[in-house]
Length: 96
Image 1: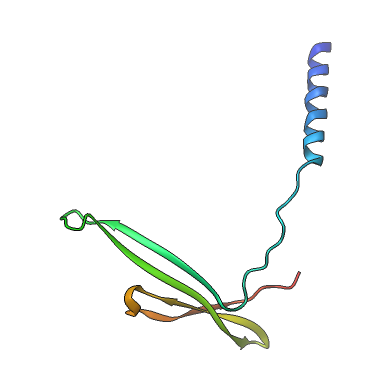
Image 2: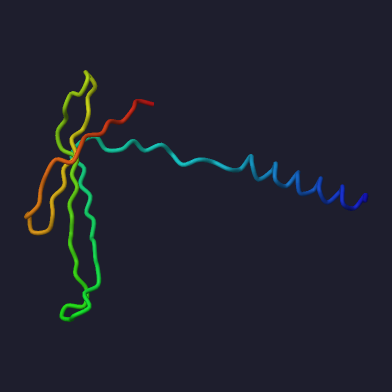
């Protein structure tokens, strides 16, 4: 019984020691303007050629808009070869 208590106490002390050495990531705010992301979508084609199809999408934060007197960043997407484009919404970054 005494060994079990010593083991539990040791494990508890180790966990407390590890907890004090943990740190969180640095806060990086989401970009508000002039940010660009690319996404590639692929799917199999069962009648080759080609064996796999790819589409590349571009997402862009560009400009701002006012909704209920709150400033938002506009979010756009562009499909492969510029065939599909459009405004998909707006987002805001809350001040910290």
